[in-house]
Image (cartoon, rainbow, N blue to C red; front, side, top):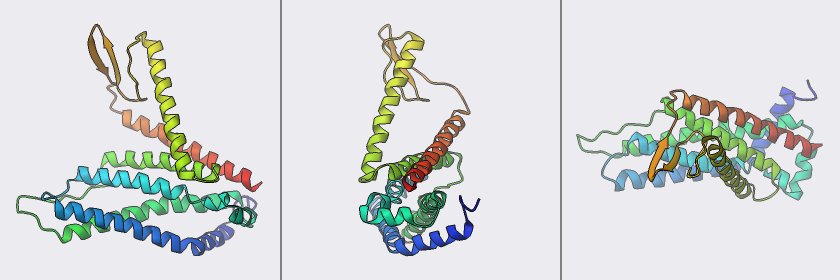
Length: 259
């Protein structure tokens, strides 16, 4: 077991990684906080009505995905630079320990920091803004049912970004994003062709998996969707399984590089 994972060795590796990158991480936190504060100040002080939870959720999700995938794509950047790749690969630690350090910083630690900055900015800006008596400010609640799907989707995109960070040597974020959109387009086309085959209809429009089935028949347009109350749960299960596969693939890709 010590040849695969050692807690003391992992702890030293985590401290070493933190000491080498803490300036970059602190600057990233400052930039993220600046985006929240400056963007939030514009919304709070330029728009007469308080931002509702739906708007807050939209901002939360968009910035989470953009900043999270961008940060994740750089977490293994040392392995793509010639001057840093050899020291990183020959460091006396296992591939699992190196992978876990990158995974911890880019997933649970990043989420905790992101959520903390988001709510600090939200409460700070709202405390300095006063609306009319008939206007009320409600803070987005992360414990709502729909918020779990947000983090599952982010976990899936994190898995894609993490695999791309290990697989590609340069421009990891751009190449990972390009590969994702091309793959997603192929999935939509294949899904649409599959629906045409099983339904016998030739007028089916492009259909996203688990989405609507739109088609024309006798000069009329129809839209069909599955009435499944557990559809969101099934989607989360599929995404969770794909996420685990992507994390596993990223680990073995890093292990190949070390070998």
